[in-house]
Length: 279
Image (cartoon, rainbow, N blue to C red; front, side, top):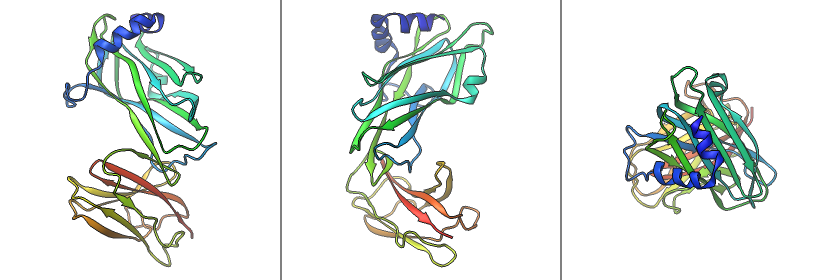
């Protein structure tokens, strides 16, 4: 388990790992390079006292010796309350996982390593960990980011190239959204809200001040983060736009009553709002 001996045993070795294994996105091709990244479901309440989850995910990790990293967060805003392995990771008896939570310094040290008993190494495509954070106080934006990150070969000495993508989040009307792009993009509150799809539709207004490259989408999520409807509009002109939502899922069925979130994705800009369906 050289990856843990190297990483957890000596702060100087952690600094060496950081220097050798991490490359910027401009230096590496995302088509064939291992990627370790963070994600969070949209539509999560970020008011003080509430909890939300961040997922550590990986793609294209093939037969490595292991993975180790620090995750850093603002200790004045967030407290890490729980770390849980994914079902896939928990079921693999050939993979050893370790983590140490340090809320005083706003950090958690984490790692996965192949035990060597099977000789297959550590490979991953999908979720590795689920981290539960509790909001200590309201915030306009914050970042959860990697440091001292390393992906190591089976020999425990050689470092593999990897991209580590952090997560920027901003609080927009009590919901989570990835912080990126032009802040002048505006997503209005749907009206009427609440609404009963059996009786009426609801209108969603948004403004795009500049022409966006790529598809503009409006996605509806339930409380679990499951996509129930996705509306795509292609490249649209700058200005004000209105979408009429009929309260139906992708199969044309009326959605049950409850809290939902709608998310505007326009270029790099992503923002979400909450809506309520009553029946």
